[in-house]
Length: 213
Image (cartoon, rainbow, N blue to C red):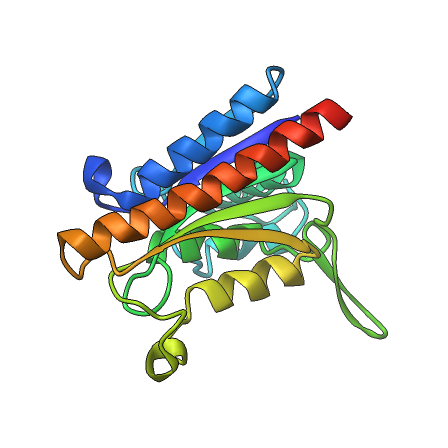
C-alpha cells in the first residue's frame, strides 16, 4: 500500500494542519506495517503556477518542438501526476487561506488535473480516472464555517476539494476538521480535541480494515 502525505501550510511547526496530517499518517503506519509513504511539502517545493511553458503536459512527454523549459516543466508535471496516481491513500493538509486553499496547493492540483491521467471527456461528459483511492483532508480554518449559515457560503476550501477529487473519480474523501483555531486558545483547544476524536475514529476503521485484509 502506498500513501502520499502532502502538506501545504506555510506556518511550519506552528501549523495545525501539519500536526493533524502527521498524526493521521502515524495511525496508517501503525495499521499497515508494510505501508510505503512518500512526502510532499508544497510550502517548500511547490510547482510553478500554470503558464504557456508549463502546459507541456498536454502534449506527449518528449514531443517534438518543445523547448528545454517546456520539457523541464513537463517532467515536473509527469512526476507529480504519476506520484498521485500510484498512491492508494492521500493525506492532505489543507488550511483555509482567504476562503480557499493555499496557492501552492492549487498549483499542485493544476499539475495533476490531466486529461487521460486523472480524468477524460466522454460523449456523456467527464469521467474520473483516479478512483479507488482514499483521500483524507486535514482541514483547518481560523473561523467557524461548517455550523454558521452566514459563513457557509464563503467556504471555497472544502467544497473545492470535494469537487476536484470527485472530478478525478474519487468517492472516498474524508475530512478531519479543526475550525475556529484563530478564535482564542479555548476555541483552538476545542477544535483540536474535535479533530483528534475524528482521527481516533479513522484509526479504529483502519485497524478493522487491516484485520479484515
